[in-house]
Amino acid sequence: MVRYLRAELLKQKRTFNKILIWLAPLVTILLSVALMRGRFLQIGAYNWWYMLILPGSFTMIAAFMAVKERRKNRHGLFGVAVQKKKLWAAQILVCTFYLLFTCILFSVLIIVEGLLFGGDLSPAQSLTAGIVLFATYAWQIPLWMFLADHTGVAFTVFVSLLCNNFSAILFAGKSCWWIPFAIPARMMCVCIHVLPNGLPMEAGNPLADGAVAVWAICIAVLWYAGILTVTALWFEKREV
Image (tube, rainbow, N blue to C red):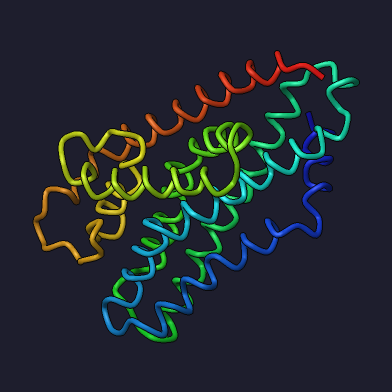
């Protein structure tokens, strides 16, 4: 499996994906510095990040990766790979690593932003929020790669933004927060005390209750494992 991962990382050299994992968090920070002030500086940046820029950028990364391989006919590897599902799993794992990197980078930039311009979020809150966003968004990677392989980049990104935004707005603050697309926004209520609409939460708001955290992360991890397994079995059955 290590050789598959090395091959996938090698194929990502000089691609837009390697730029995007740096560009997306940096653009978010620059926008917040230009447009926000005071207590809204950091929480505004985080709200734009998990509601729009993160789902859009990592869906693009997953879709670009899948479509590029489809267009190149998997570089002829279908005819020589003994376990084709490892090709698919390696792509998903590389994309998952990129998601982790960009989430941690954004958290670090938020900390730096707070030190330079002030803000309400502590370094611990920022890092926790970044790790939680990674854990609760990662399950979507195999889903969007599968959809992009069957449709294309533009349609996949559109569906991703639609699902993530509408679910966050409609379900994150309600009893059905466990709907997978709504979980990241629900967890940001716990981690950084920000509502899906970007407004800071008032003290005593029940949405800040951290009791849902374990269940939320478990649900997201199970979805990741389940979709990865199902799509890998589909990929194994593909013909040359």
